[in-house]
Length: 540
Image 1 (tube, rainbow, N blue to C red):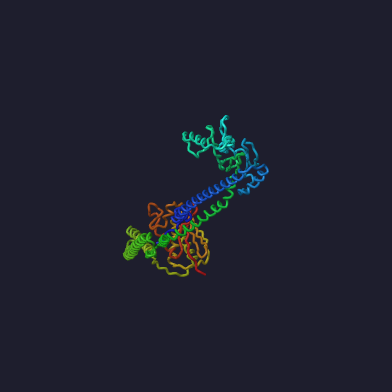
Image 2: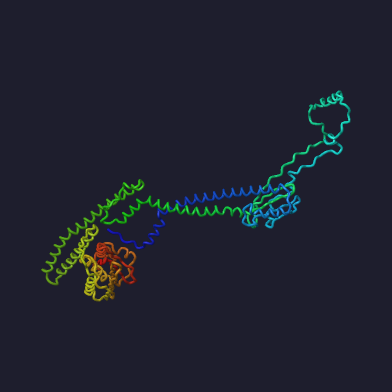
């Protein structure tokens, strides 16, 4: 048994392309790998950028410490501004800005690229300097200081040890230990230690021109601030960004190819099953897929498929054997019955009702015999045992004979013939004549009273296409789909208005396929039916 051809191959491929399990595996692998790679790339980019930004901040602080430790004039700042783009690797001079102010916020130097929004987050120098400038000492005006005590001359004569002892007594009475600090005035306050200056600070500032990182340091002389546009940082990261943008799609393409290949290798057992199903016909029901080569996941599927093939083979053999046996068994009784009816018709009175009844019965027996012969041929075709006697056949002559039959069967129909001469092909003459007879008979039976029949031939490579058209009513989609089914007739009521059993087209198609050809219903214009018989020509 062969399967009817699929009408819309493009729609079928599109349908299975969208629902491909192999494609879903590849897309899932690419999605997982893409998510991991994008996450890794973004994380790497963020960490590298943070490290570069920290490096930029450290460079800013180093430069601020160097320049804030000394007092410089305007010429130094002018020369220093020219070297800043090179120090920080800036491609544009206006991406680096410098400002120097004194303690009263008066501008000592300011580069051309500096503008007011850059100093929004920088505190004023006065408030910053108050943290580390020492406060003045607080002493009473009438009390001598430590300097006066140290510089007072000693007017006493030779030391009188007795007086020294008398001087020590008050100190001992007062509780002071010998060797303590000198006797300082009661209102003396020691000077606090000088606080170290605050280290440089860095802030991020958003402006209309973009994001800037601004570093500043406060010194006793004033404040020094350096601003660097973050485009400088982005420019230094451009090679890394390009590497990531090129590497990720490349790796994803490799992952997609590898996933597609590995999924194909994993699904090879399914492809074997699919191939076996596609080649399944009456002659291939004995085929089996080896189970030993399959993976564990597919072994059960292959085993079930082989068991299904075994059941189909047994059922098909039983059906074919029944059809063939029934045809053979019924052929003999029908032949005997036909002979008896013919003899009774000859013996009956001519023109009598008995003779008419016997004639009707004989016609039905002949029709039943024709059905049995077709069933026998179909059973042989299903079993792949249809016997063909190939010989060189002149298709052009057979078509001319069919035209003569049309003139005898339906002289009222208009017949148009466009047959190429000397179309020779290898075929069984009797079976090929039966195919043409079935097609011509259908064209006559299902034609209109004022209709027509056209017979055309066309060479297509090493094949010939015979097209038989006739005028008819439009066929519905349901009729067109079921036209080659056995025992199906377009007449829904199965009336006897048109003779036939619904086996002619099915048998003609099987005979055409046995000749390595095909028979199909072509797309015809409204108001006509077109059958196309394709057969291989003789090889030169």
